[in-house]
Image (cartoon, rainbow, N blue to C red; front, side):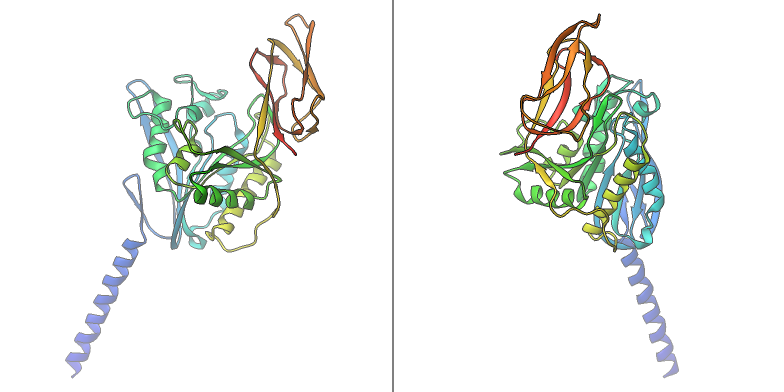
Length: 352
């Protein structure tokens, strides 16, 4: 009888260990051919290279103690958008995977060469704008290969996707959240809208607003949408500088998303249940090359026909005034003097 009880105890212990191992394996997260255990935070670098150029994508993986959804967060698609990049650095130090339900893939900066070389919008290795080449190409230039890495390896692992931007070295920008709204994908669009609202910004911008996506994705977040993933943008920060209030605001927005999607338990901050939804925007372009002058700033409300500024030639001679074509709010504007014909001077969200 004692032998029977001993054998039964051993059998139960063995079954428990096997069950524990299988459960642990079941809760592992596999990404880029690596296995991440529950309750871990791991920093990795994905190499991207061509025959002539090499770079990396620095990523932190937070794999929660409890199994759940996967959230992708991307900063630094443009190298001079510092507020998102700094927010990602701080955010990575504040998330405890042991308190997390689900997994976060945090891309600290998508475009390392542009960041290190202080390059406006383009990757200096091939002079291409990363947020204009999606879905990218496995055999293309270095920027196209970065985009392809996101399209094939990072985005498909996500259930939700957030791309964080700011006003760069010539943009004065009013913070807002944005999402893709295509009528043939109402469920994905609505989920993205709910997440964008949960971020707590006063303005939420609808991108798309048409029947379906007809062309290439072009943008990283629209690539996520085309893969069936609710995709949200944040625009927060301005003028290519670091302002702590915008770094903090981005972190609040990201943590609000974690609360909204039940990655973390807690109370969202700076919430707005009824932000203004901007369904249409107008870009005011310069009709001349020269100097641009304006006393308006992002966030100002304007009326149709209101004088917004004026243009001079390269000698400083007055050429023409610039007027608002619509009633609305200035979402972002060029704040420094040099402009070429066709340069976007203002982006105005329509207010009815």
